[in-house]
Length: 245
Image (cartoon, rainbow, N blue to C red; front, side):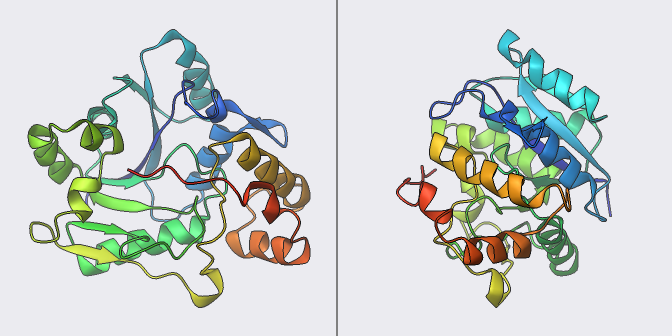
């Protein structure tokens, strides 16, 4: 098995919540939490941050370096090329894609996608194929650098360049796809645990305040238990609509 690296794309110029990548959560930037959580995934060989050449993203470079994670700087708009080049910069063979919107990513969820990708040997694996099962913010994708390089040469539509992977799951006739199912107790697609709006930030901040002091790497089960005990928290972002690829 070639080197398996998580690639986390992030920038400060988000439309709905500018600066969200560095939004503070329990004393550290959101990005730092994502890196630390991914470093705890047993099957990952490393985590590389893919940011842009814009000066405003210098702070992301600094954060990645403080977390002892390599960082690659590329195109702001062409995320597909940036993710590919970041993976190539660390000689990765397999990309585990987690976006910079996911400060609640669960290491066990990531590990389950990696194991399925290794065992089933598809072209592409993810845990949202066929519809959302996990809460938003727990999305994980796995595919080879070689395959991404191939589609990067032919993907010309802006949405493909911006969202990176739709070409895989929109063309099952071309690619062997594997969907990783969520355990029954984790099937809460109605929940938003992703960071994209002020309302999302309010919820995630409250979750970190409640759970981080006891366990910095708290998992999805802990989050779901908290939201069951305090249902008013989930209402903080219940009205936010998801942007689609």
